[in-house]
Amino acid sequence: MDLGELINSRGVIRLETKDKREALEEMIEVLARRREITSKDKLRRAIKDREKILSTGIGFGLAVPHAKIPQVKKFCAVIGISKEGIPFESMDGKAVNIIVMIAAPDDAHEEYLRILAKITHTLKNEDTRKGIIETKDSKSVITLFSKMEY
Image (tube, rainbow, N blue to C red):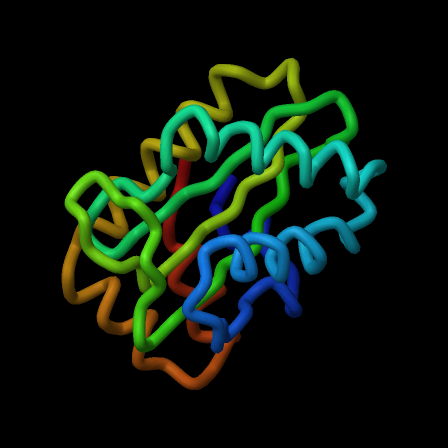
């Protein structure tokens, strides 16, 4: 399966905010519209609880907030892109330009880890990140993710 299948046509968001909480909330709103999600409130709570434990800003201008809950029927994701960057309490202290939010069923641990690993490995490449940040076309972003097999 490729990662592009996790993102639908409205799954790429241009983030204008400079606030981490606002960015996460905007992404949760979009992700929760997916039919794979049966409870927006549980998704919101799980994402926010995960961020309280440790920021999902992993460095390289990348954050991967994620939740694994019973109210997710099938893996799905949304991508937020901020050209200016959002302070995110990242491990390297730098602002985040790309946020990949993932919702997963709570019983899919192995697949969950493979998806997280593939996203982080691929997006650590500076040219890939720059391409995503600079593109104006959401379809191009989804196509890039479609090339990522997990």
